[in-house]
Length: 276
Image (cartoon, rainbow, N blue to C red):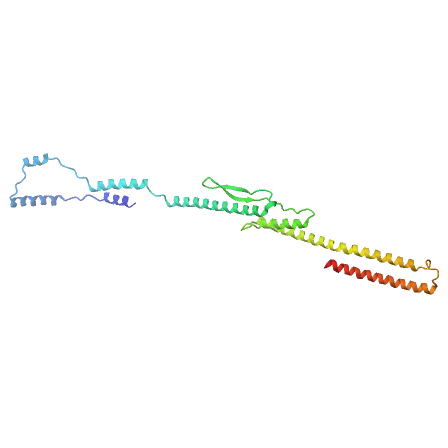
């Protein structure tokens, strides 16, 4: 410190010595001056009187300054500010605590987003993993929420709706994790499979009425042909000759052809009405 350096410099200065020749010359000049001015010389009696007067010792300036400097040095040492290393270590601790607090908030918001979006398909609440900070407190540094991702048996419509909710829950946080993206991908695959099953069921339902209509029309045409044949058969009409029989057979074949064509026409009409 500046005060300590100043005190050391003043204490190291040497004492100035007066040469003896200069001192004797000074005494002689003083005596001559006294004679010229008529000043009385100091007699032994006067000398004894002067010697009887107690002398006072004046402390040296260096001694006073040294004591003051020493006391100032002690005070400055006791109240010295923290060093740069101490400040740096304290700043690092505060920075770590600040980072842990920010991570704790981020994790809790992340898992709450999953939990809110999952709704009825959440199988558990949010669970966290903790880390103890330099201040002795526990901070959440990781977490998870359980979500049911299984399809609903024999109900592709419900499975599709569930997969959409699961995907939304997986992507709910602002920054989805790698595991969140995996769950979202699995939900997308489940949605694709559910849509395929729904389309297949609709196709089967559309084809079923057409098959029943074709079978009924075919049965009706067969019955009509049999009745016509029975009505014009020679066994039922003995008066019909051979020529008439050939004509009747030809007519019957024409009627059968007409019946088949009519059945096909009705089938086409039925298909068009179903598709519409």
